[in-house]
Length: 205
Image 1: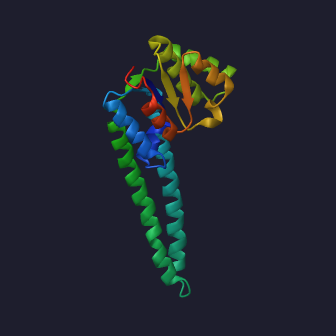
Image 2: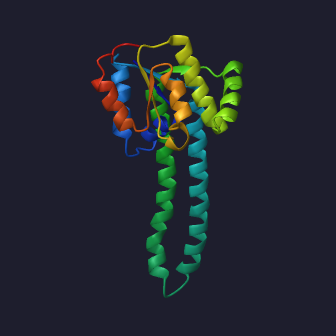
Image 3: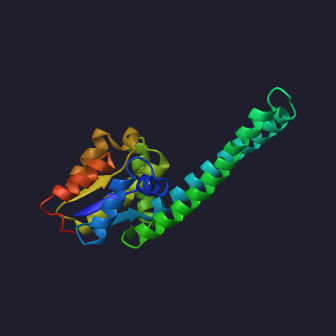
């Protein structure tokens, strides 16, 4: 079986989100040969963009908070409370550092197992068509075009595409294109783990 994932899978592990344990178990299943993990190369870059955006936002919030706390610290009324709240700014800094380390670890873990789908001109052209016909965002269109291209080239007996972007991918037209290649769309990584583990063809790639 081929298991396709995109950037949300990486972020789930990197930021230790609610389905991170299932994602790690899926990586372990693939590392043991129970399935083949395949990731669009485009989806490798997206998590870094997400991390930078989160880090910038926390830096902005932290700087504003430090300024406000500095004013309050000079107040006899709120001085003690403001000093206690200084820990919040430290938490923002530490969380950004931890998420960066988590992203690096997640990338190392996934890239040690996964096959990447190269991003080339043909996929970009197909993504442009998908963006227009399916009303997808440019990013989602590139991911879907990558998955469809790999499916067309490999023709696996069984495959699934796991992601949490149900707003765009959980669409009848998208599902129809995946189903044409016997590829099942799974909007939860927990469900994806169960699907792979229960499949009688989990070892097929």
